[in-house]
Length: 328
Image 1 (cartoon, rainbow, N blue to C red):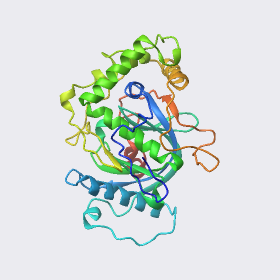
Image 2: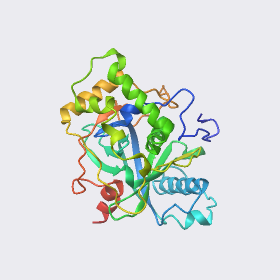
Image 3: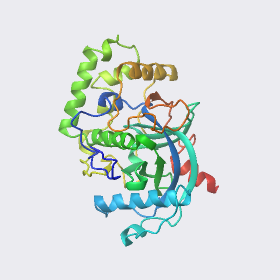
């Protein structure tokens, strides 16, 4: 499990914890605009100059730690201290990050990571899952920070850095659970199949079944995530303690458009309310108490719906919106 006392992560975020995953995997695998969301603070992004594929897991994690450190330095979140940076880390990162501190929601599902405004739930960016390769959490004084690596429209790679406060481990474990689902190994498929059968015969919380396409996608084995791509298109991801690797990442070029159902925004909101009432998620690490920090007044983690369309002209990934958009 995660240990905060000395600022060192010891949990393996790609493996199911002893007490089970924080979220219902069948719900997390619906996609189609259904996300689990956390209120966080976006700090900034830094370009990854070349693919991290040649690095081992520890080296990739070190690159992410340095990305977090440079964003914290340039955002003046703490006193800048000298640190020794390995040569293999220096060659992979640009010198300076792009900084734009903003409180927002980070929304995650098997179809990608989207950001949205805290109050109006307006979509800011959408990084599709095939563009996301890696995620890691900070260490020691930067423990509250999480970063993921994604490509923009121009195939440039960026580390996107977020201050997640007390929820940093929960954010990272949610990404790890999604990446675990995307391995599509035999155990994962078996567990998802069992969950879907249980939901089809006995709705969670004893609630009545919904006449809602998103509910049917969660309960039907022939709909939703299990029907998106054949199993042999994914390779099982490596494991690491502080990080998570996406088996569905497409390093060769642009991926396929995400698959979306014909649910209306009203049906999406209805389904999100159903999940929050009957398929509650349990925090693995972040217990919010008197000293717990959440960004956004009144904002809390939970299931939500975003009417995301697979149209790059509407919005792009984080780098497209903030970094590339700011340069234009």
